[in-house]
Length: 307
Image (cartoon, rainbow, N blue to C red; front, side, top):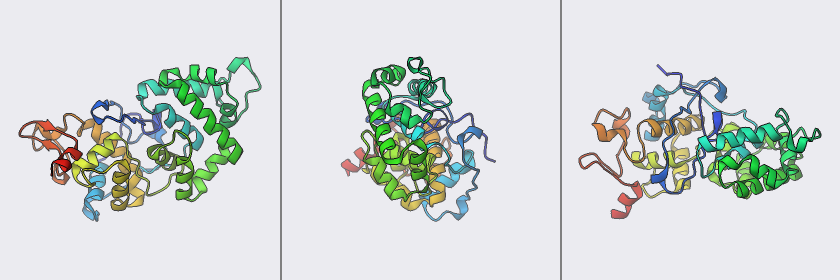
């Protein structure tokens, strides 16, 4: 039976957060909160059956569906998702969540809106941020780190959104209803927006099927399992997973694989080192780069280079 998890954090912080973009996988901290479900996470429950899987990657996702509360995604505000992901780049939820909360309190239409005690703060988040004073925004989001760079990027993107779509609501409509490839290309053209950030907006805001964002956990686990090439970069892993996993299962596969990486398949000490029965999906894993006899763990790409 699927278990109801704790309140989620995910690719966009809080209930949608987790854009840990550390370039060194060995430095990726292991968060403690469950991301895979919860009433505030949005979406609807979904049912997966490992016996019906057509590929090993799909069977992995289905097996994780037996462990975690399965769901599909969508319905979050696209512009806020985008801002939240930028805030969470190169930092942890512990640092970025207060920055997001402070930004929303200051600039969101239902926040306190006390920037310079100005009662005329625009009710649209994108317009408000496009008109923001960078020094004040930087101070507001300082807990997220790299706040000068992030504040400049947020203002630049807000200005672009207002110029192209008129408002956060107009941008949200574009993300939800636009062609997914066009939306992704548009997002990737924005300063500071990489593939994972774009995919998270497509998934959590647009609810687009067939989108499997790849963070450090997904990148590590897919290659360790052997369902993606050992030397694949993040884009290579994304392409392999999106080809092998049905579109309606990609969103859950993304969040569940992250949770599995936190609970079982950690960067330095995967559960399989504790014994053959310690990992719940042991029969589906090639253990690339994991050597239980010696207790050694290396990045899968190192195995590929050795070959």
